[in-house]
Length: 129
Image (cartoon, rainbow, N blue to C red; front, side, top):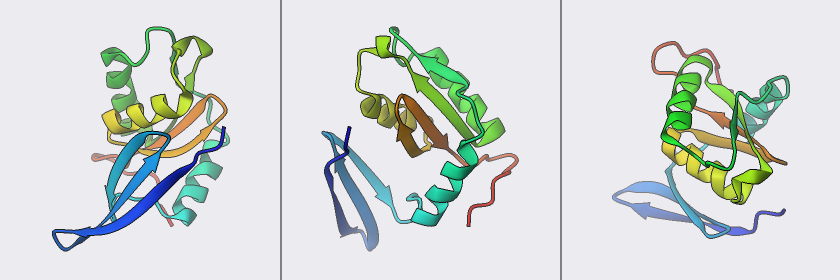
């Protein structure tokens, strides 16, 4: 699938905001919250050696799955999640929802795998370029 969308840059309360309309979903990110191209490439390269830790299946995104994702992101900062065909939702929609709920950056959606990044509050390990 190809992601078609529009990205708007606006000033709101003297802050530059990025509004992304991708496949019906809306994301609003401040300049500090947005990953740059170099950062995204760096994280994608790191994610190649990682296996998915979680699977989202027919029960969808449950509270328990989100708690486990929060815990894993705090411990590892970079994780993969696999969306099974039984999930019944488009992978991009599931990815945006998980990223929003987990407070993480959606680094990449490739096939049925989602790569998420969130800097650890306790022990930051990954230094972004």
